[in-house]
Amino acid sequence: MKERIFERWAKLRDEIWKTDPHYRGFMATLTELNKETDRGVALVTTSFLDMLMRDAIAAFLIDNSSAAKLLAGFNAPLGSLSTRIAACHALGLITDEEAKQSDILRKVRNEFAHKIEVTFENGAVKDLCNNLSVPESDKDAKARAKFAKASMLLLIRLINRPAEVSQMRLKCVEWGKTDLDKLGGFE
Image 1 (cartoon, rainbow, N blue to C red):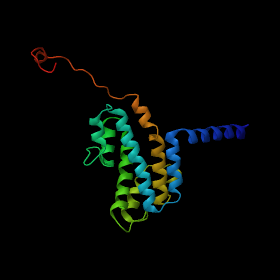
Image 2 (tube, rainbow, N blue to C red):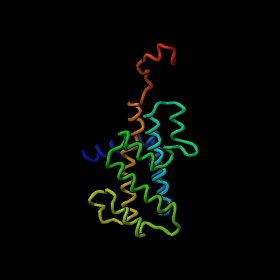
Image 3 (cartoon, one colour):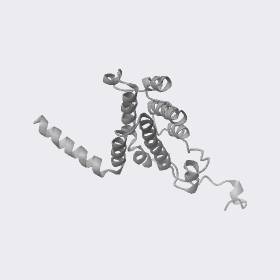
Image 4 (cartoon, rainbow, N blue to C red):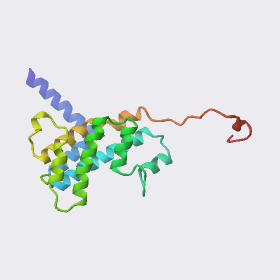
């Protein structure tokens, strides 16, 4: 009986992962990670995180050209992972813990992006990975395994966040008219 339930659950899970666009992207990331070097793992994982943060902000902001300018283009105010994490946190789109974990992952990524001879067993990267939240069973794992586990757990939590956030998208409102409007202001 238990085997049959597990088989049905596995089949349903596989169907969702194949058809849902959010999970398809996640599966592509997982597949890619298995082939990657330490640097590749850090860069690919945080690239996916960056995309989810960008998409969550875009799903929340009013859909107009000003929102697009905030997120993309040269010197976009919300164009870096650091500012996207801060914005998501300040807007209530991610929790305190999600922001903390995202920031640690970002710092690990920066170590790999800005230094040549870096591995997960290097001092700074290893120390950062030891601060990631992982299940008790992974507390003694190597730094790369901690990074992979913590990032996958975070990405799973965030994968549908843009869709969830879009339900609360900001809307442009017409603010109250003032006496200046009656005198020929902005009418």
